[in-house]
Amino acid sequence: METLQLAVLGSGNGSNLQAILDGIAARALSAKVVCVISDVANAYILDRARKAEVPAFHVDCGPSKSKLEGEAEQRVISILREHGADTVALAGFMRIVKQDLLRAYPERVLNIHPSLLPSFPGLRAWEQALNYGVRHSGCTVHFVDEGTDTGPIILQRTVLVHDRDTPESLHKRIQSQERIAYVEALRLLANGRLRIEGRRVLRLND
Ligand code: GAR
Image (cartoon, rainbow, N blue to C red; front, side):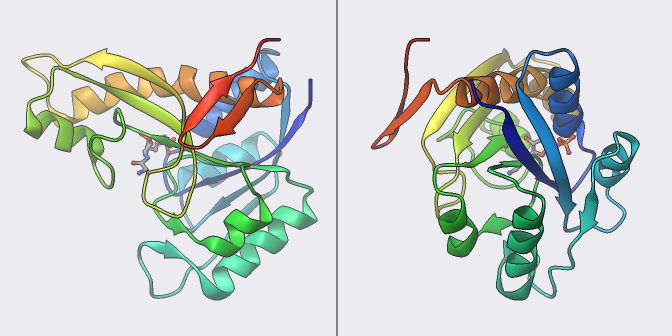
């Protein structure tokens, strides 16, 4: 079993970061969070990191609102290297990561998305699902490739959609599954149980 040297990138509240930190503290996951990076200066994810005594960085991403590229991407890569990261977990990071970062961490960048991919990629996936009228939704943890929410799927957890759901109530139910899903996916990775074969991620035996 390997101890993941994990960097977490996020733009918001950081509940997935918190779940990962709690999973490590509970010994459910063999990992150390070596740094947390946000593109949003006052994102709560940075406060959570500081509270846990994890090095926390804001990286100004310039005019692009949706991409991590150019100088900002290089700055992120150098922070990751300085802190010895070997795995990158995107946790509510609202930018598309580009080739240089993916090349620096091949098969080692993961993302969590609040829908059952390939349905509803992109923004406010829970609202897309509700508006479409699906009866099941959930979350997906996947390896990141160059597309938007298109990489090989590691695992998914489902929730029911209720008649009275609002976008917020559905998102909350999905997030309660995200907390379980990210720790589980990272545990499989740390235990060397995952093998990517084309689009499929196979589970090897212990
Ligand atoms: C999570 O629901 C995550 O799945 C979603 O943002 C939220 C972040 O919450 N990510 C995306 O929509 C990415 N396309 P958190 O900051 O509390 O972890």
